[in-house]
Amino acid sequence: MSDRIFVDTNVLVYAYDRSEPEKQKRALEVLDRLVMTEAGVISTQVLAEFFVAVTRKISAPLSVIEGYERIENHLQAWTVIELTGMIVLEAARGVRDHQFDFWDAQIWATARLNQIPVVFSEDFSAGTVVEGVRFVNPFAPDFQIEEWV
Image (cartoon, rainbow, N blue to C red; front, top):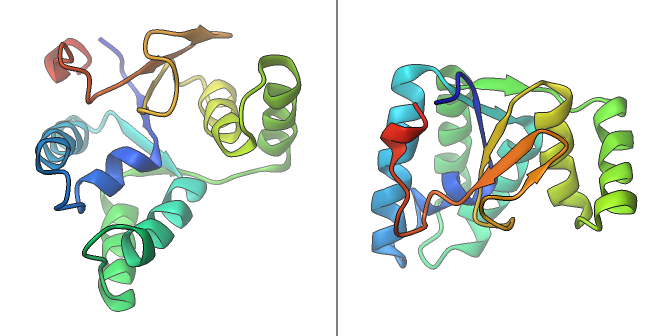
C-alpha cells in the first residue's frame, strides 16, 4: 500500500480512449479509486500532455472545450504538483544517469523530489525501482488496485 501514487499521462488518457475498451475500463477503475482515496497525484506536465492527447491523438478526440472542462475537473479532483526548476534539473540528471527519455525523466523527477514512492504508468519497465521510485503498470494482467490503495 502507498499513501500517494503519481499518475502518468497515459493512465488519464486511456480513460477517454474508446479505441482501447479494456484499457479504458481499467483506467477508469484505477482513477476512480485514486480519487476516492485521495491517493492520486498528477503534475502540470501530466495535465498539459493530457490536453494534447485527448484533443488531438486519440481516435475519437474531445473538442477543445471538452478538453478544457476535463482539465478543470482534474484540477478539482487531484493533488497537482507544479513543475519547478529543480524538477527540470533532476529530470536532466535522470536522462544522464538512467537514460530516461526527458519527458519520462520529468515524471520520475517529480515523483522523486516530492517523495511519492509509486508511479502508475505503462511507459516504464514495470516493477523497476529507480532511486526509491517504483514503476507499476496498471494495465498489466496481474495488477490489482486494492494492493496499492
